[in-house]
Length: 243
Image (cartoon, rainbow, N blue to C red; front, side, top):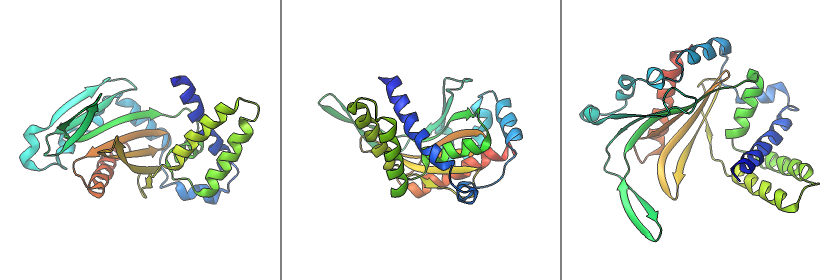
């Protein structure tokens, strides 16, 4: 089932990418923030070997945290030094989340969090990487949605109706993406609110620099503007190491 989900999701993204290929260069360039030395950036990030606390140090994170809470900041690693690496800096807040287990609900602490994960290196060229990145995160126009829907209907014409219906459901989910583009950050960047079961988990910032991608997750406030601005500044600190 998980494999089928991945295949359908890739199909939807790829369907959109094929449409991008026919667009004028001037239109594609609107989604690109700045020129980067792709080879240099990739080589720089690869040199860290997924040791994320060197890419985003605790001292750098403390700049965005009140001095009175510095001693409470904890560091956690998940899958350290691998392509699944995640670095988490967390500290207490006065907020809580409500979680449900079966028919029971309870309040749990909603800690402040600043994390770095999703470091990946594209194996395709920079232009195609940018097209795919934009297709994954940018908000679809109604015209783009209808075009992708038409392509899916053609692609699944000879397959069971249920498969097309499933693909169209995923496309409807894709249409609801509310990512906001960030100008002047890397090659391209988007942030979006991260909500699960009506609980607000802050914002996720997706950044592309050449053929390198990473994600910064920030929840230090109930205010998306504060969280997103902090994530953007942290991403700038990270990119500054690999100019």
